[in-house]
Length: 238
Ligand code: PGA
Image 1 (cartoon, rainbow, N blue to C red):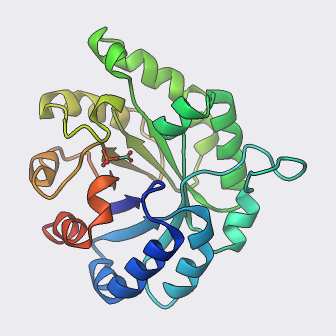
Image 2 (cartoon, rainbow, N blue to C red):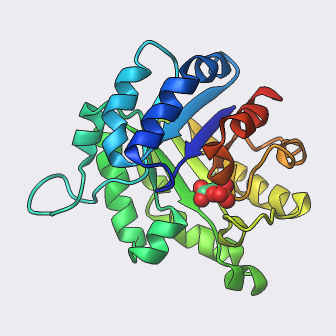
């Protein structure tokens, strides 16, 4: 099982550092043959956290990367720099990026290409909005979001996180019957070396119910990952 802690912009540099220092040993114990842990802080904390965790099996992931290799792109961070800073994973296509930064499927596809070229495992986020969910257009949306990405994956290790936008940060989790249809559909795509995660309001109370869906191989956890005790419960009950 793969557990990805997406801290978003919730922890400052100092808060990320003190969390990591305080819980390094416990996090390390949670990360074993059965469970892998990936911590995704904001950019400034990536390098020091990768250094801090270098003698453990805890991985560090970025929350985004540039769609460009290098050049005059003020404020952006390249996949190459992320690799050099010690990132093993990188989230791309998160719905908050799609919404606030008007990220397009084409740009996500460029990001994916650069991550794979730099040997960073992509965590590709897909998911429908509340409106498209209500209009029963989920599969159309997911198909469009994946269209440019799947042909690139080949035999590289990758992660796809299904995160319905209406479940992110809302405390609402879809019914298992709904999730089963989504994950069976994803499974049918038979993407080699791809782990399938669920994300959206995952917590220590709903993780058992979610894990009844066999195809779910881990979680992308936002809010609950900010609190070590909650994260520990989500992981260690597995
Ligand atoms: P949440 O966030 O767990 O707070 O809903 C998940 C995510 O956005 O990745």
